[in-house]
Image (cartoon, rainbow, N blue to C red):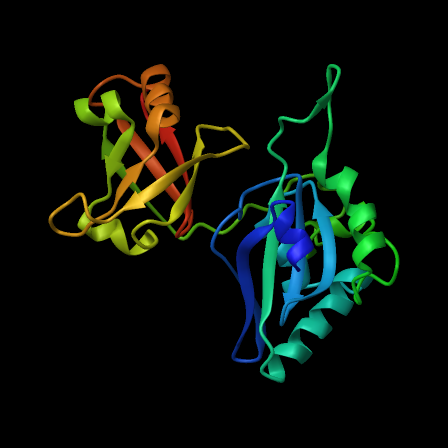
Length: 254
């Protein structure tokens, strides 16, 4: 596992059994696309995979595999067996930042690294072969033959706020009392997806700035610049909570 940590893999979530059914809890990277992921048990890398879809969508394939999806079916069974024995199954991930290029061409980090990581680490569940891209299709997509529509990652909750002068100037916003339950702990890093962007900027959750302990989302210059380019003062900003440490912001200004 240390070799994965050395190249930037980080904890993204874990698997649990909920009344005998497999459930995935993602704390970060849930909406990230072009991403490498790993299933890890007791520090041992069991499986390496990649997906061009959102990580949450890809995990749905393991949770509810289609009958013809061999990789999904096998890993579904393996994960359930380990959880039934009391063994934790963690999910680690390495997203593609989109910054790697060869000349004018973008280098897909997940596609470039997957084969060599599997060759070097030789994870037990990979069977010596990289995951075929076709297995990224989830059970939901399979239920509609010919459909190219991508399933949408589950939303934890939604709320909105009005763009105040201090938010506009410094790149932060406060979360109200009724919505604070959706947001993670003080000091955690939070992914901020701005508008329709597929790549997040990183912010911080601050639960010490407000006297009532409600979260302040600190997005810095990246969030400030988006506020300035996408909305005017007093505009309403809607927030879609993807996980306690991942949100998407959209301007409701016509």
